[in-house]
Length: 314
Ligand code: ADP
Image (cartoon, rainbow, N blue to C red; front, top):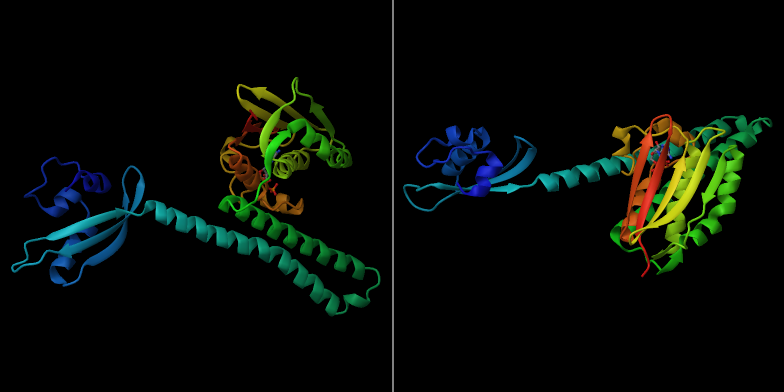
């Protein structure tokens, strides 16, 4: 038994040769694999789970050595934990996407059916139903746009136009839209100007997307009368941009998960507000694409500060 196999099977005994396999490995699957290999002419393969300090998935392949009588069996173990985890992520992702697509589709179908069953002649409500169909179709469109965007960024296929970009310039460009949205919710929107012009190397459009998502969320998750602040500064050789709100806040447990695709603290509420649950995942991947990172500090009921950190332009 080499060092790797001892680690994988959690073998503690120093001296293993001459001792019963089950006693040393305390693992029935491995013993069965050896027994099967003795019996068979072909290698015996099997995947199983070991629960030790951390849960691991192992693939075992037991092969009979040639000769009569058979001198022994070689057991090879592969740690396939990462592979399993990726498979799970993929499965979960497909399930999530299907679910997210199903909801607006079901809405469209229900409204269309209602219209067909007679509501089309109901002059008071028919336009409302058509408007709802349009709304749900827009949601589907947004969802697909976000998914495609995320896929492009993640695969590194997004063609960025990287150059020196002033953060103040990006903020200024987006400001009219933000002001309008903040006003509609009776929020105060404040820009704290930096002492120096903060210039990063990035794609201007992508920076605007990052900011749009963060400011959009801040406005979304802050009740009427609240305040949203955007500020930038330099720190060493990093540019720091923060979006602070006095909104509902995020619990420490949720803070570790909100950057995952489709994760929302309150699914029903986010959907109602037109969220796709992909915004922060896009922010994370875009920031990373420019060599930066995103983080959050937040307190439930008090508010949140989202911070992006990017390398300064030389
Ligand atoms: P969504 O489309 O649901 O806004 P995001 O990926 O942008 O998706 O955000 C994920 C979740 O993180 C949101 O559903 C929300 O629960 C939480 N969240 C994001 N920004 C804020 C914020 N500023 N204040 C409170 N919660 C937030």
